[in-house]
Length: 164
Image 1 (cartoon, helix red, strand yellow):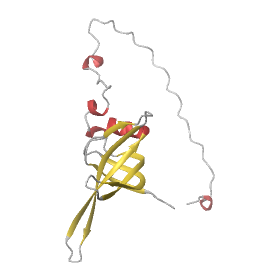
Image 2 (cartoon, one colour):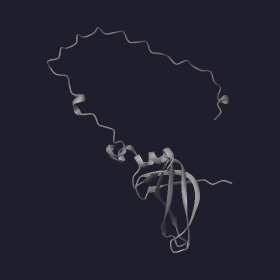
Image 3 (cartoon, one colour):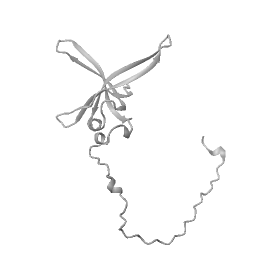
């Protein structure tokens, strides 16, 4: 049997991470996906699906570190049916996605550096300061001869040998 789901969407809430007694990370959040379609009358409609997703292990820790509500992601995983009995005695169920692969789709400039990488400190302008005028000037070096241009050898290929 084959059970694979691929979704692209935005996270509906911040990551909720916890650890098992064995020390393995488990993170939960939700994803919202949209589908635009035309009705029989030609009217444009949007259908939004909200799906709960679960990350495990290192993927859960990475998701917790870099993703926030609204982050755009592509997730690959498998569909899982959760079943339980509610406090009122009724049987309940829901489908969730257990994420096996995660790809972050937001560009680096979309989130502040402090949020995505708290250990990063931007260089100060002093690091790029001009040398002071009191510094001794280096003596000019004599010009060296430019290296001769390298020529690209010609390859004798018949057009019939090209595979495309």
